[in-house]
Length: 158
Image (cartoon, rainbow, N blue to C red):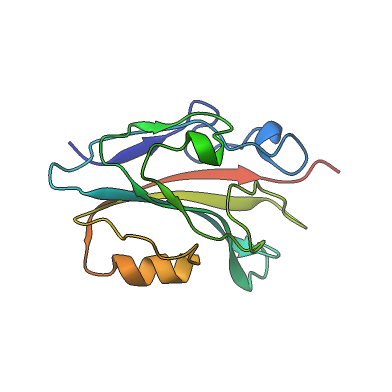
C-alpha cells in the first residue's frame, strides 16, 4: 500500500472551497490518509504555496501549516481542527505569518497551487520549539520512509 493523502473538500488538482481560505472562515480542510508504512514512527504535514506572490512570476514558497510528530496511527484530521484537538503528541511549527496553526489560501493575484505534503518518518522529531518549515525539513533529512501529496488551487473572488 502506498502512502496517500486526500480531502473530502476538494479533489487533487481541484479548487479549495472558500471556507478554507482567508475569504471564508479560514478553517483547515478535512484530510485523510492511508498507507502509512509499518516502520513509521511519526508523520509530518506541510502545506505550502510555491506560486507566491504571483504564479506568473513566483518569488518564494509561502508556508501555510506545519505539523510534526503526528502519531503514525492517525488516519487524518477533521475540518477546522484546533490545536487542542490534534492527535497527541502532534506538535506545531510556525507558518509564514510567524504563528502556529493553519493559515488558508489568500493569494494576492492569480490562481495559486497549495501542496498538502505528508511524510512518514522512521523517528519522532521531538520538541523543536515551534520550528519553521526549513527546520522541520532539516530534522527530517534521512528519515523519510514515504511521501504523499495533495494539491488544491485557489484564486480570490474579486
